[in-house]
Image 1 (tube, rainbow, N blue to C red):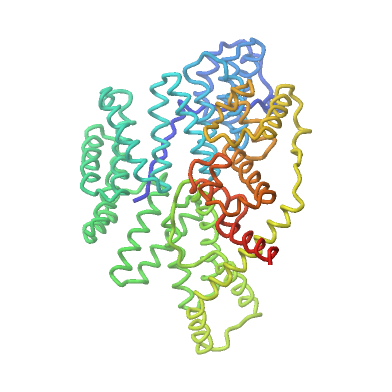
Image 2: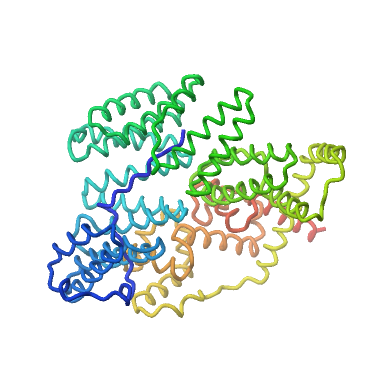
Length: 562
């Protein structure tokens, strides 16, 4: 139900942010300096697998572009350079593409820059920024009428939404995408691979939406197309999807045979992980816990190699923790608790933005405490005295879990409220510590206009957008976004939401009548269109729900009035 192919083809991923030159240690031979841009581009791709040679060619291209005063070729040079370094460096080059292509007459840029940033943020595990940038890439490609980019970017956006819980949205994206490819008759042309990818992702989306008959239809279409075109890797994908579909329709015997008969692909460890997950699930259903744990341990082995998490991975580690806890094997239990915390951290970081809900057997605070206790035990500081004591203690824990949970939650909320109140009392407007990093006159001007925007409470406009703010400031959205990120340390959306929440907190301090407002009304006061968006932003900023905060303020007012 998961293995989503996140397809990002190198033809449309081009890097960018203006670094002060490439690697200074690169020596450009005279033979490269006289070559044309076209030939250098061809040489780069011929030598792409040879990183050092490719870097030299890219550096030559960049130097030639600087000397020619050709902005398009300069952007293309960043494109080449950005394929050679770490994700962070590539993102920096991607920003250069955005900066230098803002007013460029090109059908490919700046969409390429946004796509490259999305790809690298995805590689870093920052799915929020990845999705944000792909959406910007889509808007840019649509504005420029770049059909090829639209096809590629749509695939990625659908994959991100599908993999992280927005199943219905992903399905609509893929259905529309499939219709586009069919109407353009792309199935037998250069877009054949896109057509197969779309068939595959459509089948997965139907699976996620529990429409298994529809999924089966597209799986069979994919198998037929793969066999006809002798696309062996795609055939593996569709066979895998077929096995998953059999499992999800409770045909476990056929599903097990299908999974065991799959052709392995050494380059697709993610699919190997999913296969072992389902085989483990079926082993548990057959009351063979030992075999199920063996499969789950294979899942763990894969995760330790590729670090590619998915929501169901949490279930794997919860089962491993439980199993070895019951077997009184603390070393193993500790190992899997650590893995579970690692998965939990990543899922929690991205779940809020991509709407993924996970049912947990173990809460993170308890896991951290268990980890601490196990470490002490393995060091000989906290030995269990007997199985009877352990069983008795476990019973007490189970008995008091609800009571402890609610007690701890009330204590945590109260502490957070006091901390927030203390901050409110000491609050004063702070000038960003990053300002001294800004030397560009345009950036300084944008900062000044942002200060005026904040002073005039422009952020309370519910129809505010990045493009609209950029027009009001007299700049472009790319540059304004960059300045906000650099000086505020957050993206545009978080910047506006934080301003709104800080403003309503200030007003609640000064206008006591507001504490009797409904949450919806408070949100509207500062530009939120609905209570859900306001509550989410409020909690993110304060770590307290607005309902609890208002309740405590009312209690304080009642005490003052008595």
